[in-house]
Image 1: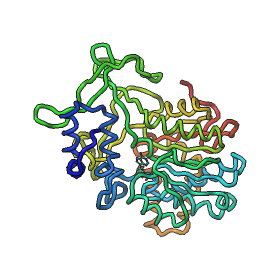
Image 2: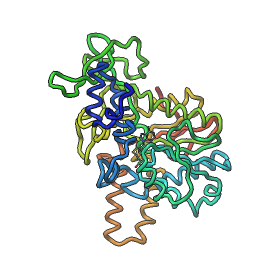
Image 3: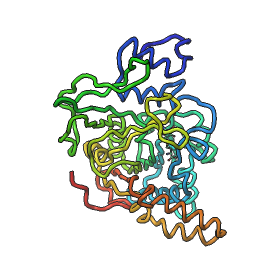
Length: 376
Ligand code: SAH
């Protein structure tokens, strides 16, 4: 990106992106996503926007921890149980990547305080978050000492238990489009009317495709999640060296495949990913099978993906919901029933969302996963 003057920096992100394209030509989909989400002044996540923030009923989208406290409670139980499987290292870094409003971690800590006091004594909390307003919300929600980091690379060494819900889907991907027998970089350009539009870029020779992406037809798109792969490899590498485990939950397919999944979201409605840059949330589906392979290449074990609708019941969703229902009013019980159905229902989050775990060599199978690794 050009250095820019102070005046350039103040211009709306759309104006700056248009100026950049006029001056230097079209940008790759990865650079587009990186600017729209990570621009320090006006990026969707990195910029300090006013208002309710992205997550929750008043924001742009709702995530599993915001649907029900049960989600964070079960992930907390997973963290404590997996810490024991790892030999109860003390201290242990309890890390969350992209903690949003801090709801998941607050629920996880509250639910484990009594059943897992040893885990609580050992843990040292580290949160990776770029958004200043969300950092403040996390501090309020969690109400205990924590250290914030802008990047995974800044996390201190040592055994770690890492949680990440809907983090990887916010990291930029490259897109390639298959045209006239070759893969080409998919770019964002300006059309004749001055609007942002996709167009084909340079041929990419021998792209590193995943199994399941080899047979392409004219116009097909594949996504190369290089930033997510680097994040998972960094976490897996440190876990392989220092011990511990990680749990990634995100939406995406069971196996690698072909397709354009870039999606814009504004006020709970789908939005054009090229419209209103910086005000529109951009996400892609996460290929957790490819992430598991990246984790193994980095020296760790990996399990999954397992659909959320299978994973959460295995962690004890029904027993947890029954325990909460005992002290609840009829209206609260009904709300709880609806929330749990939303988390695990096939037509809702149960089959689209998947869980994948990473562990140090020698770690037994963590709760919720199967011993046999998936093929491919
Ligand atoms: N896990 C939360 C929030 C998901 S939204 C939940 O389930 O509700 C994505 C989160 O990742 C937000 O907190 C966002 O600010 C953060 N984030 C996005 N890109 C990031 C990056 N590159 N580095 C660190 N945090 C990032």
